[in-house]
Length: 575
Image (cartoon, rainbow, N blue to C red; front, side, top):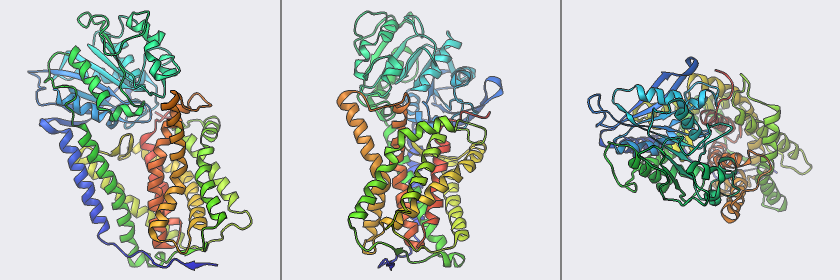
């Protein structure tokens, strides 16, 4: 029996304004922190190998002039990230008087694809940094996180006399992606490897990160035949053979938010580079910038909800605004089973469907991002399973309001204006919406065409999934708060449980559960699902309570996720 939900949410015309103000305040805070002390930030483009277009953010401290060249640092992010991910490192290096080039690797951010090409873009980045007349070419450091470490290792190989020191954050030397390291190459090397890094077998050939001191590969670099002692200097910095191991707490991606890991990089460069304005490694302010971008991120979600609400008040969309209908009268055993199965199904299928996706949908000109293709296959197969489960006898038969055309236009307007707000924020303050490596930013022309291709499969997934969600879990006696909480649990709860298990194992035993070589990487990718699915739950529930339909919310969420994935993933095809 279909009954209306007792109360329809009231109009809130001020919600969009509040969201815009929160975005503005957060963006301004982030901007003030990263430009404090007179630091200028330029969005630079330059031509790399084989005519490829390269992108970077250039941090210029006030002490860097053609008459007084300053030390330089090339900072390179890891896989599935972009130049802004190294922003916290760049802020601290620039505060110490270093010119910092935060590079977009090949096939990442705004740099041309394909990923992995031309030494990951590292040699091109160092060549450009050395071309600047306000950079002291005899005092250049290289810093790279994860795959970014391989990028700077390749830069070091191409320009063996073009730098003075290198910091590998959660990275390594050697095959298959970086030059082999010795006691003499690279020059003045610091290895920063977290005590719970997920990639210790790949990076240093040890099963657990806490055993990195016993790595034979590391011994070869440090010229020893026994355990490397963290914090001790090996070799000679004066001769360019200096070596040091740092082992901060945390995990591989946590290096970006670790005062200790960032401080370790600062410490090494202050030991090995001359010039600048030294400060204690613990003197750091980057976390205020992270707070600013996080606040701006929250404001963006509020703005999006407010715009959706405002557009529904227009006469044209009057027919799209309707009281939602519940098809479930109480939380019985079947309801609880549906909640549990719905939450766990996407997680149980995560590794096998991702692996299947990698084999049946490789990167191509139409779908150029290999890991996004895995997510697409996972999404479509889950949509098929959800659709099949909804046909079982006794499943809820919902009654939703119609109007697909207006729903499509409503979603397009809502996302379009929200996107314009992000573009303006980026243009004025040079900041994206981010917490950690979870980020939204404007798309390039290339990314926009990729977005259109991926939007369709994500729309299918969310139309099927959110129809089932609102049909099976919306109870007519539920309050608004209960609806939001239940939908958040249904969409993100399984991923939370999965990550608690994986990182419980990592911190307890030193290893995560894995079945395929890339499962550590896929586990880190799964971290993204938690905030994304929380946002999806909030947006879709908000839209459902105002339209009586799952369609507008599903289309908005599809656009948000396609946008998020495209700007954050590596592009392997094209160019």
